[in-house]
Image 1 (spheres, rainbow, N blue to C red):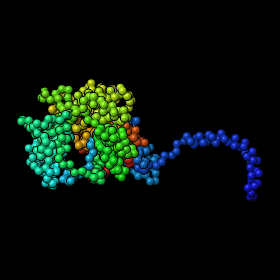
Image 2 (cartoon, rainbow, N blue to C red):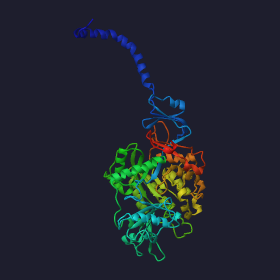
Image 3 (spheres, helix red, strand yellow):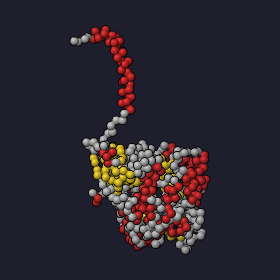
Length: 579
């Protein structure tokens, strides 16, 4: 029977009246059903990837070890037993069996100086003068001479990463005059705080015996008082800023060169970096690179001289996301440990009249700089190595925090190399984060000049960890190699490549070193909720190792193979030799 609309309109009030009792009786039942439905957990979506069989070191105290983990999109979905994680398998889930392997969270290098990779004999390349490339002054000269043959007269010949302790001394102007008398030649020390140049370069800069040492720097001199070509701290810029400009890379060359550098980082298990001091142009290039090809996470510390531009809005501010973040300001107060220029409260060994080179800034100037950063709500990251420098930095932090308390500022000291118990207590009280060196393997011999009585408080990874001071793992590359497992070995053994132990009391366990290089570094950039451990909900950044670094001899940790590196749930690097 069909009811037309007119009849329906007539019957509608009667139908509503008759159905009211039924509705009133059923309403409580409906409400209970709706409440139960809302509170019930929906079945989890299936995983994209499930990994089983591996020894998973989560660096999560709630579940330190696991035998399986699941990934969905770019995050960890579940971590636990094979059976529990296996329940998340769907028809399209990829299951990977890594029996015999060890998995750790992705390593985060919390103080590093990334630069594009170029062939050293190309237009933009710097000649490798490291111990891997040259074993003597003569070999260094020959290598630089090959580069000079490719460069027009009058243009800079540049090299990098030489080590005076491995060569026996610093190269001088006389050595580098053998490279060329028609080019300015400059090579930087592995510390980047010392350099050496030839006579051509000194003449361009008009540096003579009468030239005074600049504030915060020094020209080394021969017995007659004539500069010998070795340049320390601010003296370097006087020479490097003279004469012709070095070749400049295009934005596209930078991006392509940095892609190669990122690939090298991924190959050693690095999934994120804290770029320690850079320019607005680099920020712009990072934004483009990570938009085009996200593969490595970047936390940028803008160099202090650009702070005003940042505050005025003149610096490009890319949208922060899981790949890119800018919230810190890097500046210097002090000099170099491995370059033997840091400022100490007691003299260097066997040099009773030498305390290092004082910082260029007075306490008042440092206080002002820290105050500006602190009041802007930014993180201050200050390079300081000598105990006298560190004390000044802590004074500046203390004044800024007294003036404007900030509970979770996480201001940092980069390196903090020569510490004392009293200074470390102040670090703890002020809530400062430390990013100490872990380069005894390469640079233990450079600790000799400071005297054995100081070794037990140099690079205080162990003491800081035991005291509960936040510690961030880092290489300070190119000062030491950006290779986390070598850095971890150095922290665990405190042993140089020559086999000598420096400061055994500052050793940490392998577990502690892994935590420093993962959660410690994540905390240093306010990212501990999204990175640093293998925890459901965090970004799926992890490293597959061929062995458990806790179970190999401590002096072989550096040789544990990195078999794969995953960032954001995608395998970004795979070692073809182990596949």
